[in-house]
Length: 432
Image (cartoon, rainbow, N blue to C red; front, top):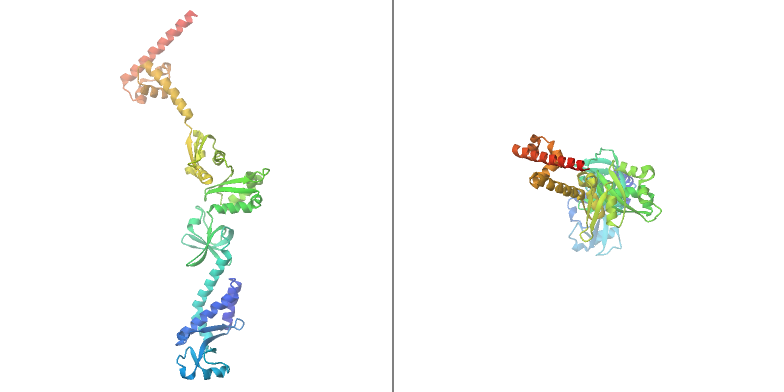
């Protein structure tokens, strides 16, 4: 009995970090509960107290009884006759209270088994309260821990004296963990609800990246460089917008580090997630130009009222600006707080269509065909009578979806135009 209680107190005090007074209070509560279960009629006793000797491990139970006149003694569980009470304390009077040792024989050995469950519940509750008190102000910090076990898709992380939980929604897609792996996490919240305090961890939150930059880049930690915005799709790509309060300090260069050393450390921690560091600007046009790099923007049209910014790019840069599955444009929108709409620049295409339309109309008039048919013919390379003559009739039938007779007619007219042009050239040469 003695060794069990002393060992229990030392274990919870040293290993779990629970204050000795709380451990003793849990023991006292559990022994009182055990006494009520063990002793018949003890439930009727209103006031019981356990006294645990933390050095020797002995436990005594005391009942507080009200002193009554001998003739009025009716409740044997809560009252004591005055004559009996005065044998213990000669100065006691009716109406006073007096404690009596009501500890049964061998109570300690039996009580430990009976009180074990109640005692463990109280100690676990004390441990949870201590977790909450220590971690309630640590939300937003980055902590290191070891993967202890898995509950469904949630990861339970050993943080030393405490245990945190990384819910499946806070995991990074593509990251796999094994029991014993050492990982760093962002303390998303410390919740104290019905099940007790819980330390909620995350590796997918944007602020996890923010804390990594603050730890890695001295200029950020001393506020020379500010992180003005972060947009993240965990496991794939993150955009970080930075600004320098010192014109002599390049914010992007400070974050990248010598030969990229600083950002490489962060990328390594993020399991090679792509990190774009861009220079912040209060001008939406300049910011979107930085955010959508390496695409070259042709036009930028911001709408301050609707918070929409329309940009146009060449067909070659369209895929760069939008990104894989729209990721680049989507992250740029989140970073800016604007709806970034990327479109292909159609100015050159429209000019080309206009030029083709003019050529086709002129050719149609010469060949006596519709503008629609002439435009088709032009797009297939028939921009002049000379080039049409060299086209086989079968090619015209299949490409223009016309009859053999119509194809022969077009070729005959083209040959006539070509012959007329040749005669005109000969006349000009003779005159010269």
